[in-house]
Image (cartoon, rainbow, N blue to C red):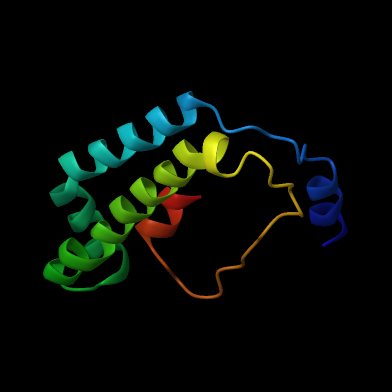
Length: 105
């Protein structure tokens, strides 16, 4: 735990989102959409869910998250120019979450 705290303290809180980040996130989202069937099969094999559930829910969550964060990154310079960073938000996954969590990391 101490190592996690030290690594977070070393991170630069003045990181500016660049247009490259937006393009990269949109590109990853398009590739996930392009290979949606393959990712649904991998997700179903990984956690045993029916393929319909993986295709209609889990993989769609990945795409929506990527486009959502790309939209926020695009607005960061104009709408949030005067915002100051207050820290980092972290989470810990306690259960087997499968492919969506691996892609979103």
